[in-house]
Image 1 (cartoon, one colour):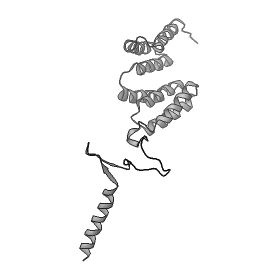
Image 2: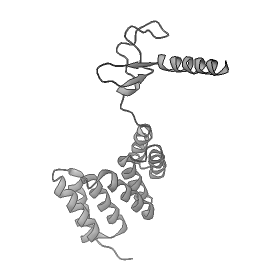
Image 3: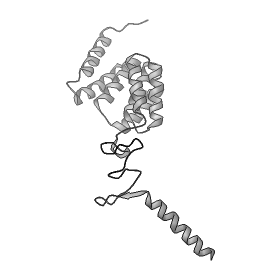
Length: 182
């Protein structure tokens, strides 16, 4: 008798679980927690026009990256570094966050951390003009002018009309001409 009760209980649980799922016959994918046509919200209006989670492109690091960029523009490099670091913890595959972290570390002269972040950014983004430009600027800050030139030229080859790259090449040439010894 207990075996029949267990079987009936298992079937009942299975029915309850399957009742919460919806299948779209066009793609055969089972979806849960998405409203059906005609369902209403707790406010009495329909779900038509509302985006469900599957429709929204949102990443957990978006807010941290946006705030970090604001801090970087305001020249608060320690704060921007902390926020970019937070973004890399929230979304470890966010190449923009890694590139921002590297640039922030450059500005506070933590070149050891910048190198690690640039390495990770390259794996995620590849050799983009922004990547080569930032690495070139990092070498410029370190005083490694030949390495800076190599990276700026790579960025220039990929984006010849980018004003930032052009300005950094001018900055490099003025650095070479105005070397001061102490």
